[in-house]
Image 1: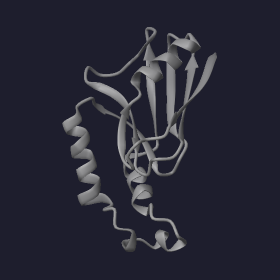
Image 2: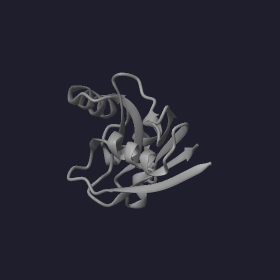
Image 3: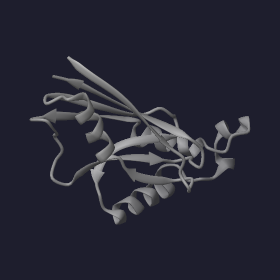
Length: 139
């Protein structure tokens, strides 16, 4: 089995941001030289997410609005976690809701995604360095 590990580092301009990382995942797959297998893509922070969805900025705004309205409003007084001196409890809940990792299949030397699928990093408490691990494995 071949493996290859790569790390991406993000330091977003905004506290919340969605970034398409599909091309980075493909570069990791290519560097591993695998034709059959998978790539694990995992956020290494508990206030960020990795997910697969459509590359459409209107949808990204819908996701951000949904998280703010329905999942975890950014209201520091609302959460016990913030009594520790933090203000990012909402980011933790958003990460828990969206998820922190995906496994992307590789078939025939390509990421085996659906026609509209792309891989995204979701930052929910940014403006400081955060990492994502990419681990390609296969033959």
